Image (cartoon, rainbow, N blue to C red; front, side):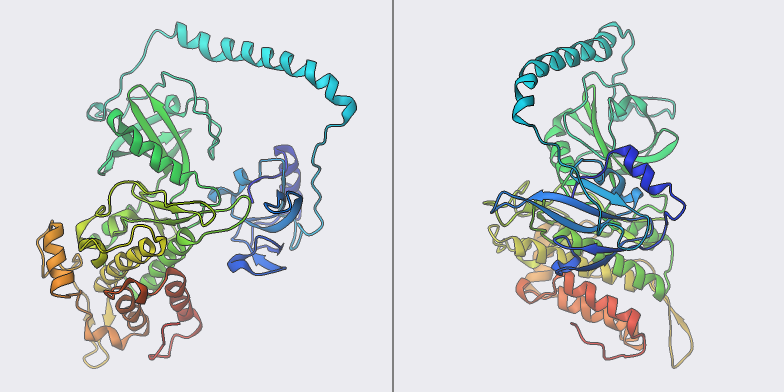
Length: 483
């Protein structure tokens, strides 16, 4: 689906009087949601309809596909840049009759091209020498960066090398030169996370030291996965190198993590429903493999916990921190994974990880381990939800607590969690009062289905998502079934 009109053409489409910032209905064929055939799809507000040309992997012939692009702030604009895609937002079904011109080289022009290409290459090399290499040679002041040295809000970064050869959401020469780092807002296993400013906009900057370069490269590679951008997955902006450190730059959300929200605030049932649904929307997209050219591999997170889930300004969840993720494409051999089996946070590890019975050759098992962790996050949310007792008319709510807070210490080891979860078979307690509320009752059923000891018996992300979505259509049926 990647590709689009040239920038000028896009502007022409989006500046007409009837250009709209609403949900567009687009014609879809070959790129429809849930693999529908020859139907329509609905964009999010500000999204685009698109027509693209891709090569059929079997026949090697060009074929047209049609579908929906995400809004500009979610990467849709940049996905519309390549020449094999045309985007529009003029009206419903505006992509149905769009055409794309694919340049061809005639036999007569081939001879001239042989002489033209060397000239172009020489011009490009001269341009690089004048604009990149020469300024670097005469630069007198360089700033050496270390994580420990970011104590002043006026400190900035400089890049000692040229830009990396990949295409990101932003075309940058040296984005590290333009970012001003402020205070530390988080710490992870592989780096510190800073609030930064880039062109007067707030961004989150994860800084890796030189010895963690492999981790930086791996996580950046996951974020750059084709067709990964989604409203409920943290938006990737760019990655860059400055001196001995690596930057991973993403969108910034002032609300912080789900852990921060639940630690400081009680939530209402409607908030709980939105947080739970948006979490499952993001995870369902992450897990989903999209077959095609280009396609998207299935991705399992492997470190889901409330601290790795951010809360956006619209109160929805989005998944972050993909340093341990695994990627899987059915037409490729093997699973692209980082690290050994027992990685992540012990408290949220699934039984099959704790007792080392997870089959590392089967991608579905990684996904189902994610679902176990999700069930604990859902419990965290529900435990912090305020509800009305129908008998006493009293408001009921709990202090924030981590899953298994009453069974294990604050920082439990893998062995302690294995004894608790596998040997004793314990799970977080589901309050009887939750059954009096339809939203909490439904989520309780989802939790119980997702933390079963047998991975194959757990709900998939798609089924959990559809179950929670049904709450919008029926808020009165207390016996809602898992679909």
